[in-house]
Image 1 (tube, one colour):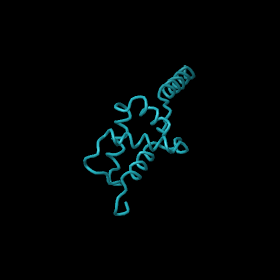
Image 2 (cartoon, one colour):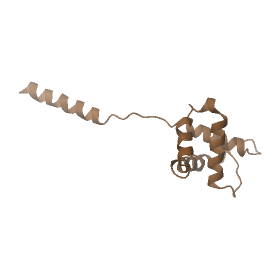
Image 3 (tube, one colour):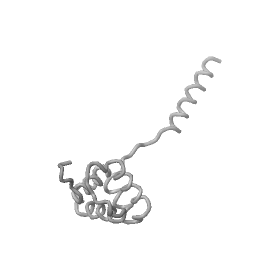
Image 4 (tube, helix red, strand yellow):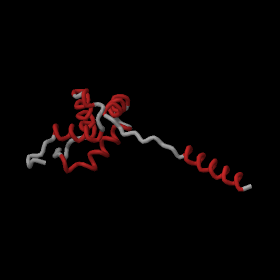
Length: 107
């Protein structure tokens, strides 16, 4: 009886741990450029916009710049730097913006 309860408990723990297993994967430049080329107004727009919203203090773009311009700047940067496509995508978006819109105060 005790062994049966123990076996059931072990089976339950294993079942739950197998169901709850998730593989975390970071978005790379390769992932982002594929999304941006396929559908620039969907995932790409949200992703680039989210990175910019959370890191806008790192670059100085003019207020009149459009979201489509920011996406195009990102795509051009990714295409011009194929050696960096394996890197973490948010860092690449920030780098693209810093190259396109450097701050005069050294940020």
